[in-house]
Amino acid sequence: MTDIKSLEKLTTQVRRDIVRMVHAVNSGHPGGSLGCAEFFVALYGEVLKYNPKKFTIDGKGEDLFFLSNGHISPVWYSVLARSGYFDVAELKTFRKLNSRLQGHPTTHEGLPGIRVASGSLGQGLSVALGAALAKKLNNDDRLVYSLHGDGELQEGQIWEAAMYAAANKVDNIISTVDYNGRQIDGDVEDVLDLGDLDNKWTAFGWDVLHSDGNDMTDVLKTLAKAKEHTGKGKPIMIIMRTEMGHGVDYMMGSHSWHGVAPNDDQLEKALAQNEETLGDY
Ligand SMILES: [Mg+2]
Image (tube, rainbow, N blue to C red):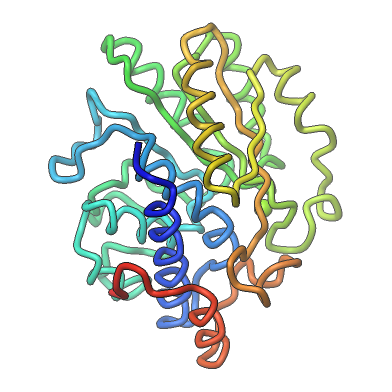
């Protein structure tokens, strides 16, 4: 197992990448990206089996990851680059015309690591389930992972997919919800309260686990446990508590940094709180 210290170092660097990318083009979504840094680093640094140098869309024999809340692309691009999918220098092109790193991930630019366009909320669980079923048909025993926003769970398609997964015993999928309690317009409980999420997913036939998403040790432990729960007839949902904007003090505690870029002074403050560990791009 990779040691926790090196994963935490990578997480700090990823947080620098996120704020620098968003600042450079004065657009993008830093809040959710920062909150999910530990999750992405754990996933690509320890959990997933993949080959970044021989990327294929169908990913036979590999674990697959689908980002459903595609607006948090900065964290994904940073982790993909730092995992060897493409040169970290390409992070400079984020959200620029003709870049492979669009605001919402897409496939037609051919960026290695991206298997479906995302950003329209609510669709990613259905996509991930399709991929999980394809793995079963192909006798491919690797797993499918997906990530969703909590605000995204207000979309009806999520619950249609949830029902389908349990009824069809799709037990090779590990989904995670980024339960930060915030969405673009405010706190989730004010916009449209999700109620008792734990009981909802359980009632829909899923095996539910919990994680502290900003504690690397806990994220790793929960993902390992989730893997042990696969193959037992039920899809798995991790309800992962995170703090939007985690790692940058002035971005934490509200929804206001969901989709706002830091200015020059704010960037300096954010960078001062996240040490350059592996070299800025
Ligand atoms: Mg949220």
